[in-house]
Image (cartoon, rainbow, N blue to C red; front, side, top):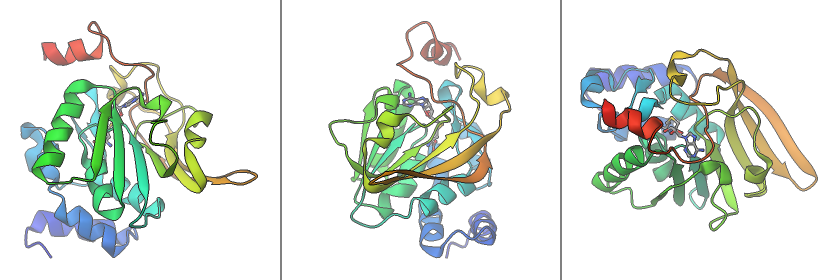
Length: 231
Ligand code: SAH
């Protein structure tokens, strides 16, 4: 166990929510400070979401751990994550499965995340700059799919990229169309689990959450990437 009191406090907090030990040990090992911007480094071990570039957020450790838990990962699995952001969620999934495929629409965020994966030698993470709403047809089907941004409804084409018996987790609920001011908007979503069965899907509503919205298409020079450059 780490002897950093901030790490111990976070792990004890997550344990109270029932997060299993193998996931706690991954949370303890992945240095979250590497995934946040310098001004927020002091808060890296807090159990809270924090702002990152391009108006996005790094998810709260509890939600990252909870999603990793509910995905019920096994060592041989191939997992698709949509919404790389800081790369923290992908880094937490990485030791728990065979390969993580992660997609991000903001190029500056993806570049930072890729440098972090390299620094931590997380060699089983493959990432790409694309619209994740299309999934990753060239690598489908996946054992698991995790949406790290909120959707009004889970797109059917993503469910189709699951293996039979495969599982998808997504924050589902009302979302604004643009992500530019999204972190300032409060809306109610639920983490939702979908299992692909032979004869349809099995759907379970998990916990209430608040994620930035999934936005279709890539940002153009005049929109969010531009906002990022002006900061
Ligand atoms: N898992 C991330 C959470 C980042 S927030 C982390 O641990 O830090 C959600 C991310 O989803 C944002 O970076 C946002 O740009 C991205 N996103 C939103 N819509 C997307 C889309 N259609 N395709 C790919 N990424 C998208």
